[in-house]
Image (tube, rainbow, N blue to C red; front, side, top):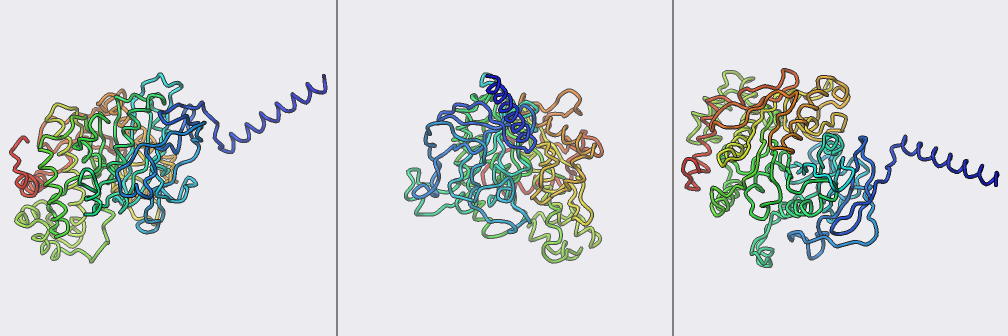
Length: 508
């Protein structure tokens, strides 16, 4: 008996030591299975204490074979308990370094091989039981509609979940598999339409969340979409999409415009925008779903384009005004004067930033006009860059590590600021905590304000140049997102290229 007892003590001690070694090695600790409409899934411990993550949950049938280029179909049920410790495959896309040295969806987190079977989502939750009703945030990644995935390291949801939300990321089809429109596909469709498969994927993910997120401690009636670049533009489109109605209550588009302004006259773009305007006209000017909006963009969105193409001089900048703005060329040059070559080179990067900001402001004003909570930000914070690294300032994507409070995560996007310099810097850490808290507060209540945060005023005055300037170096405060001269230009472009073709009247 003593021998057996001693053996038992040794076995228990060995198990405890093995468990401790596994924890130190970062191996997952299993959580209690959660029941979804399709079956049970086993989660794992997240990277923050008290957080459980469930990875690789199918929210639609694999879009392969006869389902390629089709709208997503319901997922199949499974028996037993599904393993939720690994991400699902990212969707087929161009591998790095097509645009950037690494691809966030394919080069990190032991990512599986790309596959057409890619419609999976991931859930991070701080909930201890399914009886909690925490606000839900769903991330839509950017990537020019050609790349990205819900498994990118910078969008892991542990730190946001730690602030009291259930965080969801998901994959949508990209490139030709996600946006293919073709006469044969249209003819075969019961709706006599084809294309925008990625939007269908997104809506399928939202509907899955609506039906299942309560089991993870989330509130299906408090869902906020947030996304950047292409993801933000998709939010802008989904706000006006009837099939998405009722699947979310709030939206945070970051630096993404769903309808272009006629800044550059190109035949292919004019044809594309004609279809966009036709669709918008059919939907109606007042078709936007009544949702709370927090929208904004970055002060130096166009900085990553500097150096592309031939050098810009003051002469070439002035000579190209007619091509850029047509009959508004004089207004454009008043908004972007350039007396030197250096000023011209800088001016050439600004319209991208300012047009983006104007779109974000327009979306916020549109929701404010129908009585919803609306907030507008202008991200002016300059991250830290390594010596020898191109300093893009508050460039396109610069806000992402602050939004997720993930300063230690690898960056693969244009404004890929320094992980080593930022992950332990007190100013950067405090600013990341501030920005992420604004986002979480908005998801919870429709109002980003909270204890200890600089006051953020809602959008009330239409046509105002005021916004919340987010800046950890100077201090976040109310300021101006544009000048009167630039506002005149973009209002003129909207009137000429959008309002008149649609027959919109003031206030519509």
